[in-house]
Image 1 (tube, rainbow, N blue to C red):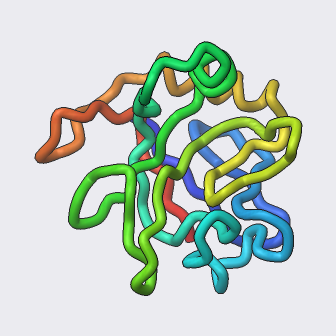
Image 2 (cartoon, rainbow, N blue to C red):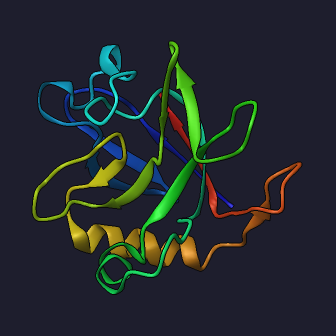
Image 3 (cartoon, rainbow, N blue to C red):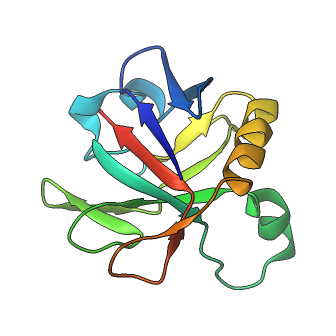
Length: 147
């Protein structure tokens, strides 16, 4: 299981497995600004520890699975290990670890600047030993500490 860090600051990177990947979280004026982490759909991922897990699959959608099939989900290590967390009375969720797409947005995900970097990280995570998250049946590739 790998352990990484992601600091919310103007120029930041996801550091994991001895590697560093340029990344960002949030959109526009909210990007990487921890003071705006509770703003839905625009603010960055809230501070805390997250498990890196397989992205849950919803309805079958050929386009979505082709584009998002390699993404990972980030489940907060909080009271309930799931796809949501509370942030100052605001419910946030569906945090993902993914490469930057054509629109260049991040709705609170950890978004890697380069697709090639994402696939290096993807291989690293997929080849690591997973562990079951305590109290669940969910397997985790590792954790990310957001600060």
